[in-house]
Amino acid sequence: EVQLVESGGGLVQAGGSLSLSCAASGFTFDDHVVGWFRQAPGKEREGVSCIWRSDGSTYYADSVKGRFTIASDNAKNTMVLQMNNLKPEDTAVYYCATVPVRRWIYYGRNWRVGAVNYWGKGTLVTVSS
Image 1: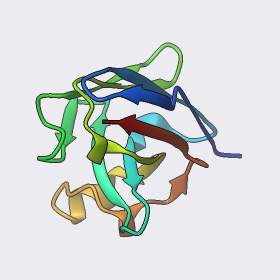
Image 2: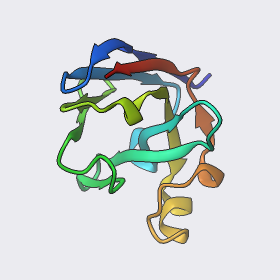
Image 3: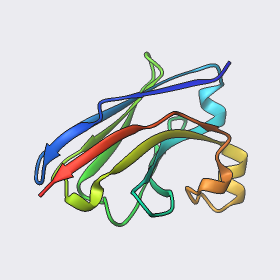
């Protein structure tokens, strides 16, 4: 059974930092890209960042480049998203997700909602101004 369990969400002031973790199990990591999407109230779910641990490839949405860093702890099968200099517009539910590598490559290495095969339940991040 595939499990993606997020943790680390919460309330933070603008300019602050949070670290999100995703504990993953039940699938072959080398065959999947893992990462994060987010969904703000009234908006569509959007890709934030992902990593393919086999070659270290990463992706960041333009809106988070230079502020967010994704990393994979291979020994623990955990993925971490370090979020710095948070802004009120980062407020959203953050979802851990996986995409099969072949599908990710087929879509030109785009981190897209339609390619996801497994989702976590999400963790809320609220950034106050």
